[in-house]
Amino acid sequence: MKNEFDVIVVGARIAGSSLAYELGKAGYSVLLVDRAHFPSDVLSTHNFFNNSVAMLREMGVLDRLLATGTPTYRRAFIRMEDAVIDGRFPETAGETDCLCIRRTYLDQALFEHAAAHPNVTAREGFRATGLLREGDTVVGIGGVGSNDEAAAYRAKLVVGADGRRSKVREWAGSARKMAVPTDFASYVGYFEGFRQEGESCTEFYKIGEYLAIVFPTSDNLHVVGLMFPLEWNDWISRFNRDAEASFRELIGKGFAATSFPERLEEAKLVGPIRGLQGYDNDWHEEMGRGWALTGDALAFKDPAVGQGQHDALYGARVLTKVLAGRPSWDSHWESMASEYAGELERKLLSRYHMACQFTKNRPTGPEQSAANHLIASVPEATGAFLGIYNHANEPQDLERVIMSIIGKQ
Image (cartoon, rainbow, N blue to C red; front, side):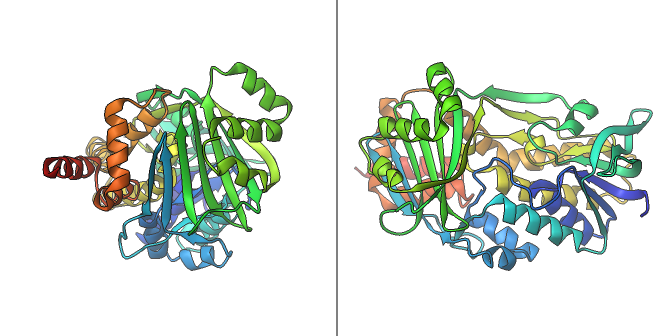
């Protein structure tokens, strides 16, 4: 195989494979590498709201994902303290359905879709070990294949799509621009036979210091996430000893005022409970001379807001657009970095700040409680609220709707 490309993408999950596909479609020669062999699972709540489903359709991969039998849904049931918000996500880009597909199916499909493009060369089982440089510019990567043979590849641009603990980000020296540590430990499990009430939906609960989220997913399962304060060391120790019993007990304790614990008790755990004990909601320098970041490598957000997979798809399009706008990259690194950062901030920063609010263990104040009840009771406000999650509207649009309703009362 050749060893020189226009772009090398390190990390071939959602962010990396979608970027490789977009770049290949734009006419660039791309090397896509990942240390894993697909299919390969990863800890994730793996949800796409309907705006992201539209992007998957435009990429030409949606039909393959739906062929797995993974169910779609349109409804959200959200309980925040005693306020219940129940409604459908607004239609966006012609799509009404949301999709929460398991990563074993999703990542393999996206990887193979990218690898099938004639401009994309893909290598599984290749571990990048460092960046190649000429002066202050990154010009490639070195690494080791699954056969332990060392190899080096050169490119005009190296993109880190290698996740929350990105090595490319570390090697490039990308500065951390923002960081808000979470107050919560997070645990995820898959359950068979979980009964939902009414139309299939995503369920979200925030009661006291407990948060939980449920999505219908592949293989006739539901993925259930539970979050509780990191400072509850006794509970973390109990999870380390018996995760399933602790998971069920804590849900029963935190959400006793709902039907959620009873319905979970009827369901059977499939596979292990997996956890993440602390993380930062962070945002890093997006681009430099010969390098760029995308996906979680660039910005990681609390999974409670469900934006990570959308941002991976969107970032791939933005970076491709920025690169395609310059016939030569060598003399435009600063302007490209500025454009890339600006486009991402305009679209994604409001949800990043929303995640930073969710990630702190703070009681719901009287003003927020009143707003939640208003959102729950007025369909226009319910739609505006849910539309924040699928980018049908912005947070300030919800504020205007709420103020308009209050003004009419």
